[in-house]
Length: 211
Picture 1 (cartoon, rainbow, N blue to C red):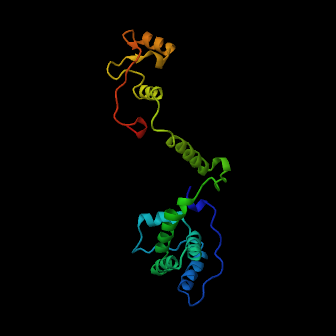
Picture 2: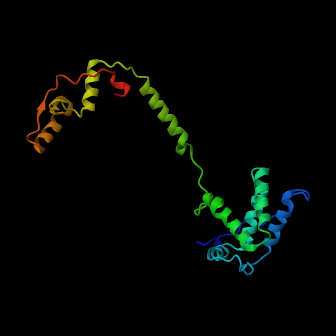
Picture 3: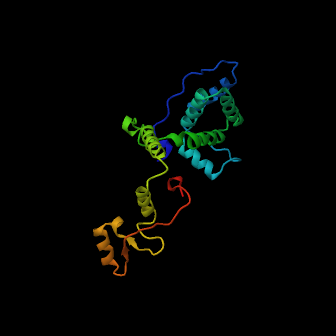
C-alpha cells in the first residue's frame, strides 16, 4: 500500500526551538512545507523517474511532519544538527526534500512499522527470559553430574553413542534394543545379526568430556 494511503503523521506543533538555535530556521522550513497541499512542478534539471515515484508516493505534508518530528525527537543534539544541515542543504528544493524524507521513512521509520498495529504485550509465560533461565538450570544440573559414571551407566552411554551396535561387527545388542525392536529389525532384514554385547571400544578420555 502506498504511504499516501496510510494515516498521516501528527501535525507539527509550533516551533519548539529558540531563535538562536541552529534548528530554529530548519524547523520553520518544515512548518512551511506542511502547508503545501501538493508538490510543485519538479525542477527540470533534477527530474528523474525515481523522483517522480517518490513525490507521487509521499505527499509534502508527510515529508514535512517526518522531518519536523525527527528534529524535535532527535536522540542527541549532534544528531539534530546533522539532520538540520541535511534539510538546509536542500535549499528549499521540493524534490530534494522529498528524497530526504523518503530516506527517513523507508530507511528508519518503516523498519519499525507494524502494519497490523501495536505489538501485543508479552505475558510472563511468553517471556524469553524464563526459557533462558530454565535452560540454564537444565544445563547446570547436567554440568554438575559426576564425570566418572559407573561401568553399567558407561555401557549404556556407549551403546547410545554406537546406535546399540557393536562397533566392530555392527551387530545389534539384543538387551539394548529390546525384544520387540529386535524382532522388527529381523523381519525387515533377515541378515541382521543380533547378539549380546560383552565389550565396547575402549576410550582414553571420559565420555562426558565431549569425546
